[in-house]
Image (cartoon, rainbow, N blue to C red):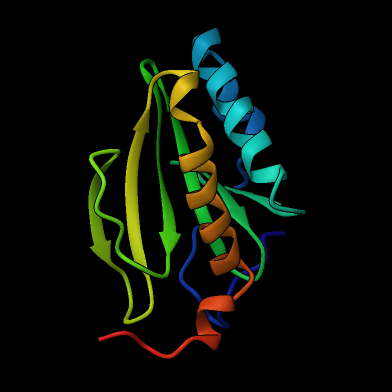
Length: 137
């Protein structure tokens, strides 16, 4: 029952739930995940879009995703600009308008106001606001 951003988008017809991803994970990782969700919830309503490998967060499009690991969270934020920060382990152009920012979080302190600001930017991508801006070159 997942919504897709594009007609005929490639996908796998398996059902995954958030609970599938939480099951058996260390309590500290589940706590980080719940804190991450609260940061996303502060932006506004969204839908979960779990797949085999991650829990996606979606509005018109998926704008963020996390994977629970034994050491914390691994995830990404789609943002309409490149952010140079040691907090991102990798930043990759996704389209002319988007950059995928990969992160690792291993402590609650990393979910600070700076990170929350990046989540807000990512949420705006989920709303499609990046499509209203001219393409930066």
